[in-house]
Image (cartoon, rainbow, N blue to C red; front, side):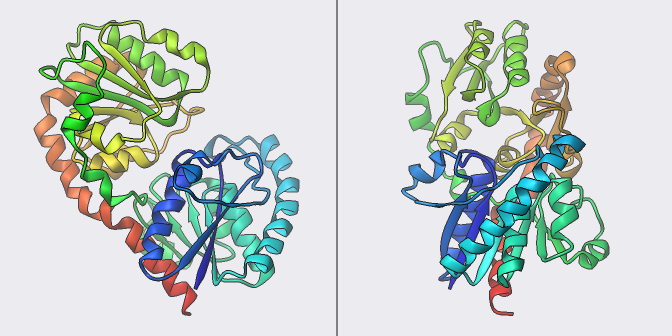
Length: 351
């Protein structure tokens, strides 16, 4: 049995990790997994795991931030990409195609339809929800506008909802290993706040780091991710700020973290829930997107703007025990999500 994952993005962040984590769960069921990325994708996450991939066009319209002009421009590219994905299906001969997020979901599922191969869409954007629900079986992740719908409504759309599929090994980090990697000046006696907008560091997150660094908050401020622009590093002049760059030892790092300041989307909020870490979601970091994940993880996630970040962090420190308890209520389901999605895909193969 073989599954072909058509993945949006650059192959270095949450989209790629979503695909890899589902694939790991499928492989436990005896399914061979192959991947396809856009030819422009560097695929660093796949390289890190020694995985090669197919190249096929996967246009992006900008996801939640897509304008009508971008959508129209992407439509023509998508038509050509669907034909390319169909040809790839005929070459790879998968038993199922998994279209992963945005353009990957649309191109993968439509390409599979043309090639007459079963498919499953993994959805988070309005575009993939609008298209994929009309053609195939889907799973809606929390960022999707479909996630808040009742089960009966989702059933009509041939869609189920699931938390983002994380690697269950994220909870087995080593605090001592992380401590050994801390820069000079890190004080283990102080609380530790982690700032991250994923594999890529966006400017508003960097501005949040600067704001907290200049505040009266007594804490270690850790920052991870490759900056979208090198100039963002100028925000990290406070002695309380420790920039770690792109890390591949995040599960060890989580063992030091008291509060995580992350974006209102994606893998890291889910990983924090699995590790019982309180979260402050800094809003509007990625092109103004808003997903309301504080409503998905009630009591474990607080929302903040730049203007009130310090105040919200104080609330998180004050209510830390209660927030950890609330996070623990979601942890088990988050850890099981990859298996739940894999079972859904596996059953599609055997229909």
